[in-house]
Image 1: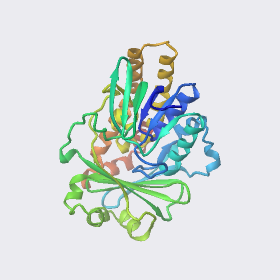
Image 2: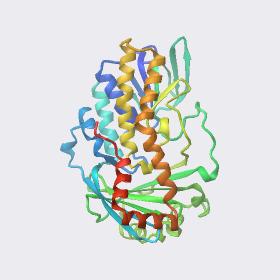
Image 3: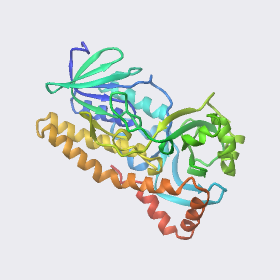
Image 4: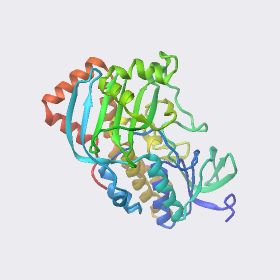
Length: 374
């Protein structure tokens, strides 16, 4: 097939969970799909790597056979204040751990198996619409498609304007894989000044340690991640123990910068968005990955109706936007409110003490960050 002259049904920019799972579903429904990913598969990315069990059946429906992977099932959460004060709670629904290196690789292989054309290590430079046909310009060639979907994460590509955040609104994410002795069924969330860090088990007898903090914290520590960790994260005794007593498996951490959580739209620049590209999902949603996966299922259904000539493009955009808001707007808002409580010495401490004495309230908050199975 001549990929440049061929007219694809759908082009997907960004090959994370949302993009890959969308591509698989559309290909399974008989549509011609091309997907662009700027990195080379498989690769590590900044992510907490905890997925709510709401997504288990869906991933199996794509053909992943999760049962065969012996993944850790997580049913308990521990949360600490910057001074080390801890509260503990069961997770009624819970989740499972798997590295993005493994999961994205599995999804990529499945996408290729069902006929998706994948261009990894490829950057999309521009998208233009001419006579109802999209022209997608990459660093290698130009492609054509009837629809374009964007799943490129929290940071927009250059051809889509992004509001410039002040330093106060900018964050960095840092991830390591470590060897430690945390029980496999527990996820821990440890707060520190202007940030929080999650630790939980993933596949291959490995643990993910991933944290979010402000760009200001890094700047005040000479833009040196190790120095920032020693001066700020170590103030939480639980984090100091992890950083000083664990075996770190990466030569250097995986880092993402210039993160902001401004409000986004499900349709922008003529592109239908999903995942973080549609709604900058704060980590304290607990399940950004599940939101991305669920969004792919919602969008796949609407796109299929469009290609079956049962709805117009305008109806596709309207119906998907409405369903996105119905499913995710409250979860994302709750995450933002929680984020304001976390990463502050006194506010976090007193909030956790209140929740410790009102377990029903704690249980309700946890349930709000987990969706229903789909």
